[in-house]
Structure formats: C-alpha cells, structure tokens
Amino acid sequence: MVSVAATALALTPPASAEAGALSLTGVHPSGATYAIEVPRGWNGTVLTFTPGYGQGAGPDHLPADLGGDAASRAWLLAHGYALAGSRPYGDGWAVEETLKASADTLATFAEKAGDPAITLAWGASMGGAIAAGLAELRPDLIDGALPYCASVAGPVAMLNQSLDAAFAFKTLLAPGEDAIKLVRLASAEEEARSTTAARTVLDAAQQSAAGRARIALAASFAQVSTWSVPGTDEPAPRDWEAQQAQEYAAFMPTVFSPAIRWSSGRAGTSRGTPAWTTAGSCASRDACSRCAPSTTARA
Image (cartoon, rainbow, N blue to C red):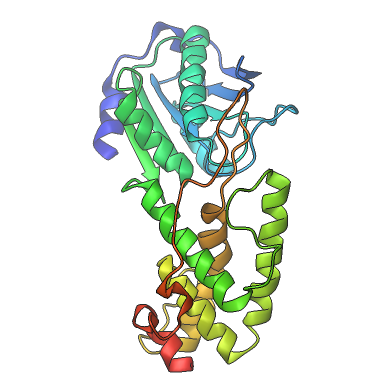
C-alpha cells in the first residue's frame, strides 16, 4: 500500500483535478446508492469503499458510506485523495449486487470527475471480500485493493464453520427453541427475530458453568478468538475463564451474523444460506472437546 500510494502521488493528476471540490450522492438505476467526494487539488487517486454485511439502500435510498471514520476521511481528502462509496439495494450477503454497484459508481465518478490515475478498492468483512473480488474481476477498473477482516480465503468456508457453530449452539443450548432459525430465512425481520432469540439463550447460558462450557465448545467450531475484545489484555494460556469471556463477547457477531443469511435484492436476487452442515458429532460435547480445551476444564 505504501508503494502504491507513493506511485499514485507521483503520477500526473487528471486535468479535472484543477477544478473545484466535488460532492455527489445519488441512486443508480439498480436502486443502489453512491457517494463521491473529490477535493480541490485532487492527486488523481480515488479510494472506492465497499460495505460489509448489513442493511441495503432499499426503497428509502439509504446513503452510501465512504468508509473509515471521520478523521480518516478528512485526512485523505486533505491530502488530495478522492473518495467513492456504494451501497447495494438489497440487504444481507449482497456480494454480486455490490460488485456491480461499485463498477457503476466508478463509471459515474469518471463521468463527473474525470478518469482517475489510480483506483484503489477497500472494505471490511464482506466489503473486504468484495474489494478483493473487484481487483480480480475488474482489473480494467481497479489498480489495487485493501481488504481487511475479509474472508479472502473463501467466504463459503467461513460461512460453513459459522453455521457449524450455530448448529452446535442450538443443539447444546436450545434444541427446542423454534425461534432460533438457522436456514431458509424469509426476510431481514425474521433474521432479526432469530438473532434476538439466540442472544437471549446465549446470555442465559453465560450465567452457569455448564452453559459457559457449551458456549466455548460451540465457539470452537467458528474459531472464535479467545482474545477478541479491543482494549483488553490477552488472557493467559490457561486462564479459561478469561478466554471464555472473550469468546462470549464475540460469539454473536462471529457466529450468527455471518452464519444466517438472507439477501433481498432487486428483481430476483437469490435468497438463502450459502453454507451447509450435517448433524453429526457436533451435538456431542465429549466428542469435540479437543477443539476447545476450556470446555473440558470447566465441565
């Protein structure tokens, strides 16, 4: 990234960079929204941001995000970098839709601001995977990518292990809880209800030693880190209680957010869970206690 940025600064900026600052928001024909910020003295580089899993623009045309925090955006603009961002129309795992929306946003950028000398894609989580996908699929548009916290080794594998963890969680802690639905969700609202029910079960289980052990076991299927909470000290190697507390804090965003999928795109976007699992030894704490030593320590 340092060498790419240095090269970008050395290149001759487009003629349009001499024009005044540009600030645009809008809606693509697909229903996706976009945002563009070009500073005075634009250096010719644009960073295009792709969002993570979450709420789409929808019929209310929720605005696109330019990425980072306010301080980061201010620094980039002050140093001559242009910013662009896209938000897909649909909710959830809208990868294909966001890939297209990002390309549409860059086309709008070129039309309104001029062709950039360097285009860098960036994003976190699902957005990071999309940034990497843009670099792979659209080398005509993207010169480099910065995916962070992204499952670039394969989203399906990540979703599989998350679904394994969700299945183990429900089997061990809430086998009769119909409100916790792991697959075939019909809407974002149904996903929210299921996640709320899972959260209730998780919080109740955390109150007992047996419940904490089962949470740790389920967390092991998704490789939930035993040091997940920012600003905390790393637990000691055999401090099972502190390690499990970290797993508990990270359990819902790690296991249920990516494990349960629903996508409500425009005009026939597919819906469903891009992951699979089968009932097996996941239901047995003893069979898999080797995956989570802390479960044995507390059992």
